[in-house]
Length: 294
Image 1 (cartoon, rainbow, N blue to C red):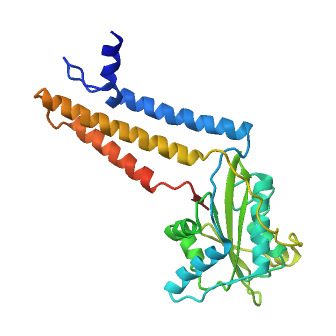
Image 2 (image 1 turned 90 degrees about the vertical axis):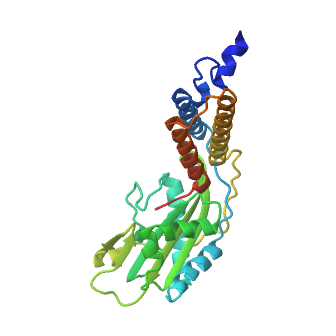
């Protein structure tokens, strides 16, 4: 009968006592395939209907500066001061990432971070850049930067005096994306060579490039275009993940209860393996964040 075939997916076999099909390794393959198909579906939708998928954030530029200075002050460092030219540079960099559709410190067209800094009229002796995308709030951005050795060193660099930050929304790789560009700088007499810290690398800028860089930025764009995605792919994936973990956990309890009632229950390596997988998966979902940094 159909029921006898279906209930083996949820209850141990009455004769062989083999685990429910949904707790088998074959079941695990099915779960993995579901996630793969989900991600492929997101990619197709993002390509065909740009902007429908994405994350709605509440990141604030002033709050990012405040949180950055709190981290600096904890170590006794002088707080950095918001600089209009660096704000312009950060805004131009964010808009360029959207226009050229890239997520990197260096643009496909060859534009560099210092192109935007020097193009804003800010003549630096030391400068640096941190990037972030798709965080839900300001605290999440700064926490992620502080958890990364290279970003933390940049954020806590004692040489910096000024800061500029842009928070921009647009469509990147088919999805609504919130980009954060954080730029630091110090002005003064030019030493042997101006230095830029990017992704843990210290890059020396030639004086010729420094002095001949053309003006790129006229002004900071006012406000942010509001893009309202219809679907949050990260939330959907996380919800599905918790549903499958709950399902597997429930089936595992049913399995233990049924075998106990049959008088043949015993702790085996299979139970330990299943519990380990569920624990690791749960921890991963709880601490996972859609945001990324560069």
